Length: 95
Image 1 (cartoon, rainbow, N blue to C red):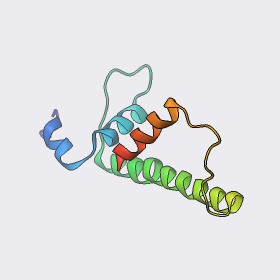
Image 2 (tube, rainbow, N blue to C red; image 1 turned 90 degrees about the horizontal axis):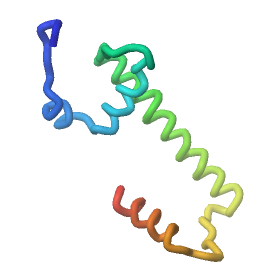
Image 3 (cartoon, one colour; image 1 turned 90 degrees about the vertical axis):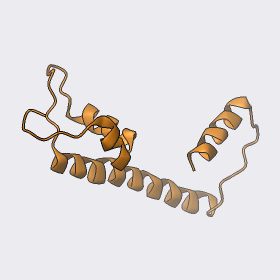
């Protein structure tokens, strides 16, 4: 706002995920600094390379491990408790 340019939070969230904003703000916030300097180029770089790139790498490695170790099949657990059902429900709600 101090540089004669401003975008409100609601408008920002109309274009980008709140999770992207949270990640970016945490990643640029040094512990001793009260002010944050938001930079659009840095935002795009961090989201694309750090967040999306690292997440994509994790998914790729997990799928590769599953294919190699379990012949591409996710094994059925011996026991299935309430915590498992809770996690499964959360995952299904993400999709």
